[in-house]
Image (cartoon, rainbow, N blue to C red):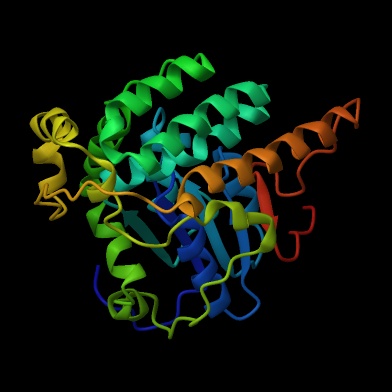
Length: 307
């Protein structure tokens, strides 16, 4: 889409898991006077309610939450609910980086759903081995080990297949959104985004403390150190064409050690947070109060008044 003649006040940010949706949304929120931040609504009812109020700010949407109902998300993007966004930003991130980022974060979700400390320790042990001896574990083998440890069924292909479907969805809605490459954002190339939104963007890259665990590297290209030649063969043959659509062209790797702060230490920190969250939920028996924003899992800033 082209540059705007007015400043966007209601912005929808869409992206896959671990593609920078939180930091991008936070920057846009800070750039909108009195902007609010609504996180990850799962249903149209939230947008119907939001549309009843004058609520400048940002709504962050995770594509995977809508992947089974893409036509509904299309309707939201095209203003077919009471919420009619002034601007829609669709984030695209190299799925090779997204895959690794998601793998490092996944233990947090598993703990919330009942994983044990022993399972987390076994997983951290594998990540530490990878950090110490990069050639010991391929990325594909790490994905399979994770599945085995946490007793889940998630294929190495699923992330790339979701990426391909997301790209198809973007193509179908190209006239209604602005595509932002995560790699451009972290490199500071935000002029196109600023022009599209019709406003200067905040220089702050901080996020609300309640969301700080989602930040891991805020960089791009980490897949080059994590992947081994067998990973390249596995993924390029299957998904090289899909990556080329957004100019992710090369598969040059440089296997090497990765910082524990981005791997084993990160996993240990967010897993401990998940254990504490799970314990606090157990300590509060009985029904929990409904979310004030009726469909979003979390809201930053003032809560919308009830209709």
